[in-house]
Amino acid sequence: MKKFDFSNKTILVVEDAETSNRFFEAALSRTKTNLLWAEDGSEAIEIFEKNPVDLILLDLNLLSTSGFEVLKHVRGRGNTVPVLVQTAYVLAGEEKTSFELGADAFIAKPIKLNQLMETIDELLKK
Image (cartoon, rainbow, N blue to C red; front, side, top):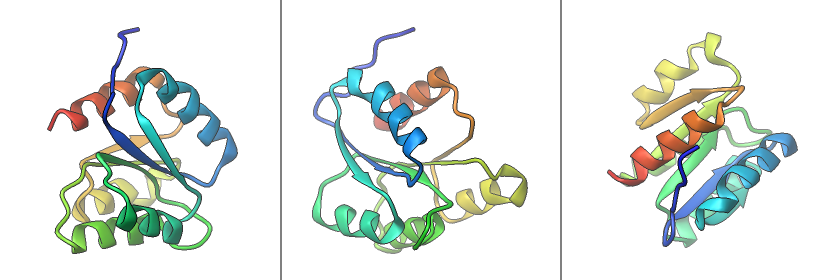
């Protein structure tokens, strides 16, 4: 697999499932990126407001404030930070809604490592 170097980049990972967090940690730890973690939408909004972020990796189905609400908040502020939405619930029309709310990319779970890394690489180059 191609080596990725995301030095000097900060990715906010918004995910409440421990197994997914372990996957993202393993995948992204080799890229030299700075990772910020949020387990729910309200925490994600708080972290986003206080930290410069180069990309948001956003789960939609969170325990409290939903990923949709996070996306609305980010775009409602006119921020163009790339948002990569990932979810297991593609049949519920979440992909269409995500793009309507301003997502830049969408990945369905289970996530393939190559697809994740290539998508992040493309979004960080924008």
